[in-house]
Length: 454
Image 1 (cartoon, helix red, strand yellow):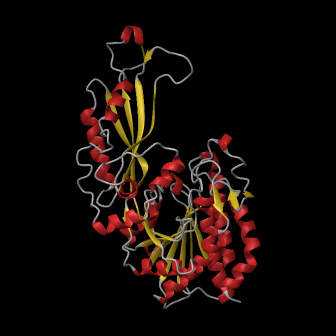
Image 2: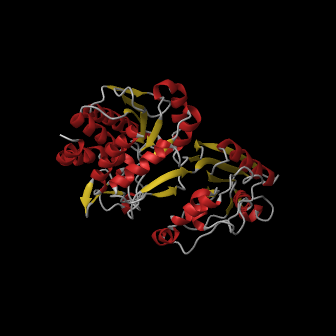
Image 3: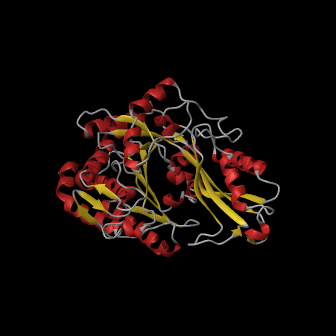
């Protein structure tokens, strides 16, 4: 029996397993669900053993556990490490879900559940491909290591220290990140992601809230101060005004700009998002700004009276959270210090202002397109999509693991997954298009062949 026949016969079982996996509410940001996160890791370990891996181990970290497994019985073949995560985002607002987020529901060729697209289906897809080779062919064409974490949705705070402590265990020739997807229009090879650094600004203007009658016009207002600080960091056209913010950015060459222009889907995004237009640096196109330029975004702001009606106070405290997406040339430490310096320089001397770095930093990452792994994945995708050439894309998002493996182990990562466009990732009614489930299984099986033959 070939691996392809094996896949065809076992699809009903695979779908049942996917439903079982999606039922686990592995919300990594919630302490109340820490047991469920562990259960998802243990479920994955059992499924990996069922696939034919006899060397598995769950490692403890400072937070949620990590699963490692390996099959190393192809001595002359390269070793690839497949990365994924089994944690999911919170489900709020629950009222917007048409069906309960942890009761997987199939309708219109889609399976709806939290984690369906991001990324339990992709984790299972990669494991199934390994199983098909091992059960049908008796061996894999390459050596395979699996690393499944459970903290990606909270910025992978313990992943870097885990990799640093287990370099020999994780040593490989190439990493495959299954945390990726394909366009509904055809195959894509994502070759770059942005980095990330976050911080919180806390402003205190008095020891307590003050009456706006006795203090109005006299006492500093923490919210006014915070708003002025935030406004000082960006020009009206979206250019970031923090000193040195752009100094180390590696600018786009003409070939890169052409690749980005060839995959310009901003008009589609504008319609999907329901926004009236785009903003950003005038010297760059919206497509370039969306994937290859750094950002500074206010993610949350709070302070003062929040309930219905009026309360005439001058708030003593105000707070904001900021994240910056980073591009090649920038580092999380560097950008944090520059933004912090700007905030402290521009803060009023009449208030106390502190800037605290938030967990979950990540370095930007670009895969060289002439790398053998990139070329193997291009060949594999052409086979999966009947000769259609993959579009080469950069992502505006962040996958911390890519930069970690490149910096600590000196290996490159190909992003190779089969989630689809606009599947409500991180939003209510997340789903996965079920036509891509067997397609992804076949895609991983073919990729193993191409990596062995390079």
